[in-house]
Length: 270
Image 1: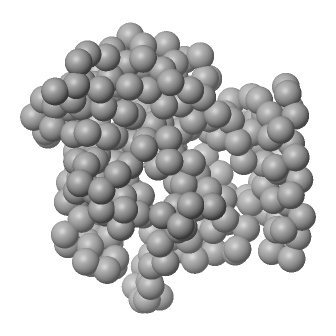
Image 2 (image 1 turned 180 degrees about the vertical axis):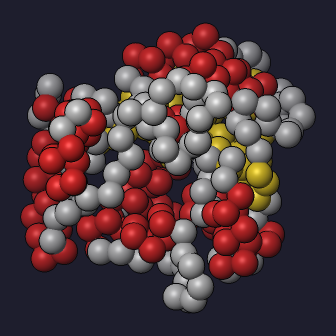
């Protein structure tokens, strides 16, 4: 693996209340850390980040991706609708106050036109209110210069875990047996919408079509990640080997847990 895609190590003191994604994923089991890091690595690689670029991290959460992009030499801005994780990141991450974190809604980005060379998002689009998704993608296009790259990931609706989640919505006994998860049950009701409770993943076709309509030319798509988050750490090596094998098998590789699509904004780069 290229050394620049080695995950940055972040020292996090276990003090106060930690965001869920920090406590249960980054500081959780080796298996959960592997899953989280791989999602970010695949997205950042397809975003084609390079030193000196101006980069936007959409739905940055506790700013792990923002931190990684900065470690790659980029000038980064991170936005998220939830203020709690942003506040923690500013004080809990090394040099967190300089990460350029802003509370904002992705459907009205607080940046000028063509302000960024790259944009990426890891597991945000499924939390975007469905009636707002076209507006969000149009806003991403607006703040990117022509020729800029965007890479977006979201859970794959065709994966076994998403199928189980859909079944669990109507089967309480199954739901109680599942580890903490977001379920696809929130209605498209603006009055009750909350991003942490809203979970409606996009199909690869929906993501492709949305990007094309917003002014992007799709460059590629990938479905990956087979290791379950409940896999014991002692079996992680075997799980990764099985994952790599599954991702090489036609048809079977369409069932990976995560969908990733990357695209270039149409127009002539200046």
